[in-house]
Amino acid sequence: MTTLNPARRDEIAARHPAVLDRPVRQRFRIPLIAGGLALYVVYCWWFFAIGHVLGTANWGIAGTYLADWVSYEVRPEVTIHADGSMELGYPRFSPLGPNAEPDWVEIERGTMTRTVPAARVAAKTDEKPASMGFMGAGGSVGGTAAAAGADATATREEEVVRRAKIILNSSTSVEVLPSRVTVEHGGERLAVDIGGGTARAEGALPGWAVQKEPGGKITVSFGLSGWGEIEADDVTIRRRFPGWVNFLFDTNSPFHGRPLPEVFSLVTSGERIDPTRSNLALAWDNILYNGEWQHLDVWTKLLQTIVMAFVGTLFAMLLAFPLSFLAARNITRSRLSNQVTKRLFDFLRSVDMLIWALFFTRAFGPGPLAGMSAIFFTDTGTLGKLYSEALENIDDRQREGVKSVGAAPVAVQRFGVLPQVLPLFASQALYFWESNTRSATIIGAVGAGGIGLKLWEAMRTNSDWENVAYMVLLILAVVFVFDGISNALRSRLMGRPAH
Image (cartoon, rainbow, N blue to C red; front, side, top):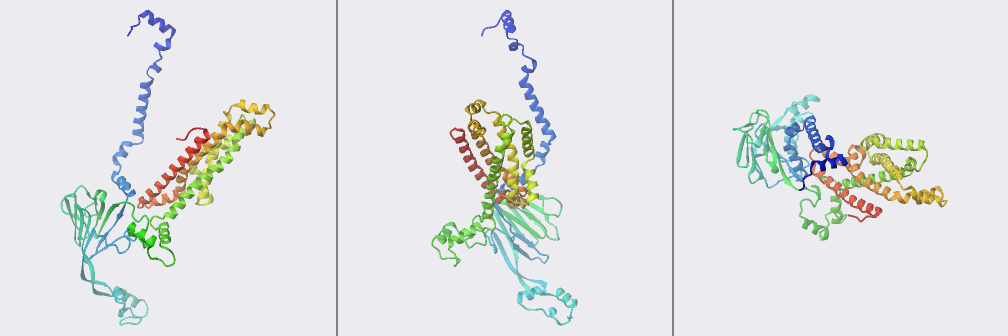
């Protein structure tokens, strides 16, 4: 390495002053940029209270939502009555269907003498109690007889649940007795007394149990296996299973619960389940009209979204194409036409597509027409601006060459302008078509039709997250397919090989 002497250095500095004597702004440009970015990050952290948000976030609920996307719950519920009897039931739309008896729920039944309304006894035995007669003993016409019938009681022997044990996995179970609940999880045990209208835990609560107030509800969490709630008169357990239950056939289908080989055998060679149609037609009908997954409705709404995006983009392209020639200063020499058309483009694209969707939903009512109109308005403004800028940047020599041979004005535009911009116009329209397939999902959530509205309805229930995951995957598949088609078409138009 050679060291410059002072004379040589002064000579170089005199000829190239910017090399050795750079301004302070240039010498410290990188540290200043880095410092500015650091200050901006600190400001955002403070202004949006990111630390507080992260610290107070309920990550457990977030994990539960994610688990709900790829799993389902079965919810056995044990109700404890004041006389010490218990009942075990499931929600009306349980994935196990009516009369569920899973092998992971152990039940001990017995009989007990219970005091019940006389009307209930009459219903059970198909007898009418004397006090309920039109002019029965002690009865009278009018409200006195009705009151006597309502107050009448009787005793009878009824079958009740004496003990219920719900097994979630090899290390987790919940045993319910009329006055006591015992929970075992991960080698720990929690005993809860549920008499006297309160739930009282014996000893300290383990880490997987929470009770917000003394005597109140106790919530127990078992991780991916599920969770439960213990109250004085009710114990509800939610056991989680991986997968999407009843995806093909719901609980009302004759194919429900059958293994796939058996279903295939019935469809191909089995005796007809419904004499009016083949088993194949019956199975296909049961899949399309699955009450839990609603495949036909979901697919129809997805097709609506695709058509909505295509038609809205197509109409926007057809209108933006001629308007862009009026907006281009080198094509139309009228300043008034240029300014009016450009301001129209600014107005149409300055209002967000979601706002247009809200407006047209109020005007036309919920449905695809509102969505198509929102896409049409927004894309007309955006495509018109892009098309006009492309026209203003064409090579005028080609247009002048066509004009020099005496071609008509229409021929000048056809042969001197369109060959330069048409591939770009088509490429931009294809990109917007692909993008609007995603945008149509968002505007559908505000009532503009399509699968977006269906997706929003599933999210609002806060319990159908597996249906949300199903629709999200369908949307992703459509976007991937359209992205590939759009890229291939754009590459051919631009004369480049597809990637």
